[in-house]
Length: 250
Image 1 (tube, rainbow, N blue to C red):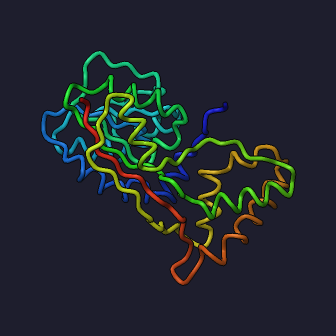
Image 2: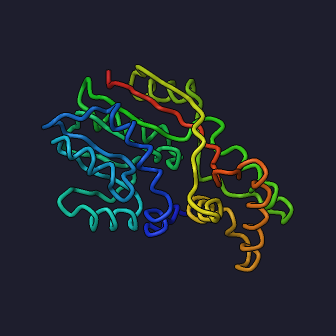
């Protein structure tokens, strides 16, 4: 399966909500000075830096060369590693593994959970938030409808587990879930082109089977299908549902 490509410039210019909402997950992590912490799926590094401000020794990891390159430019004083989370293998174990808005892009969930457990010391904590069951259901329905008219089934590059499914997965890897929360979080998208920009950043690969002019046409159809339900006086909203987890290595 082709790896998801990212546009760091569009990501930072229009999708800052990713790390702004992630501040609550950092608060849940409660990093302490001297702790060794891994930021899994660190993107362009904003939350890696926020964790580092606590005095923790933090390493950011991402599978996207574009994102890691931008993170290194943004925060040259921090350590960033280009690596597939399912294959990571650090010599020294971490006190905590943190992840925000990244795990749902990692389809090898079992392998990632085992790698997280391997990276943690005994009693170390795993604090994460990801897309949960029902995330962007309206958006995906609209994409599927528009592409079905063209005889295309979009490739699956994300997964959104339920509490039960993800807690069971973590338990098989040796991680005991202590708290889990699945909740709706309607997320504002910036500007009149908010939904179009979001689709270009996060779902553009769905249109890979189309010629360039057809992509633009399909994109506009998707946006118009979504307008009645996700556009209002406050502008565009994405129908996010988030799964927040705290687990411990047993």
